[in-house]
Image 1: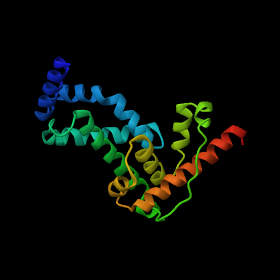
Image 2 (image 1 turned 120 degrees about the vertical axis):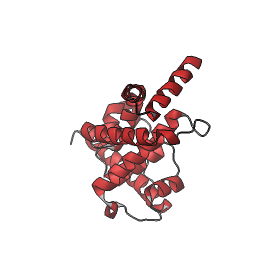
Image 3 (image 1 turned 135 degrees about the vertical axis):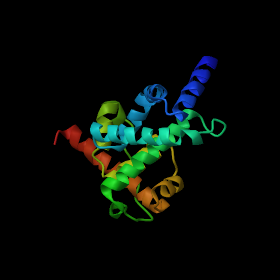
Image 4 (image 1 turned 90 degrees about the vertical axis):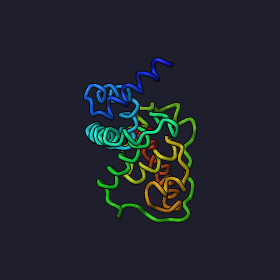
Amino acid sequence: MYNEEKDIDKIIDGCIQDDRKSQEALYRSFYRTMMNLCVRYTKNEADAMEVLNSGFYKVYKNIRKYDKRKASLYTWIRTIIINTCLDFIRAKSGQANWKELDQAAQVDLPPDVFVKISAADILKLVRQLPPATQAVFNLYVMEGFNHRQIGELLGTSEGTSKWHLSEARKLLQQLISKNETGS
């Protein structure tokens, strides 16, 4: 672990100096996990790659601001990538698609559904959700944010976040049922 930490410090120092090899090393170190994150928020691989590259551009541009006493490098990069995903969704869908509802009925997916369906199939279904609904679903279910935090990140209310999560569950339930019946 000590050598890894030393190597990361060296890579960070190189990135601060705009060293291309250090930037490549940082990109390669976090590519897989950050690409997987981007894939969850976008509709296709090309969009995911666009978001990933935009996010890493921000990482390189702001690497001087990274403080390892405040967060791990992974957490710092992850935060930038998530925010880049959200910016991308906003740019693609526009704020007009963010709906406001204070209360929404809960629609639950039965647990046995996840035994019958693969992770790749779930990802395909999540990618079919409207952009704002997909973002809320990912932030809540995959990233563990609460509705207040999601509202702050997206510039909406907690009620809007709750509505989008409820809508995601309802739509996913419909999509799963449709897939099971082969319709």
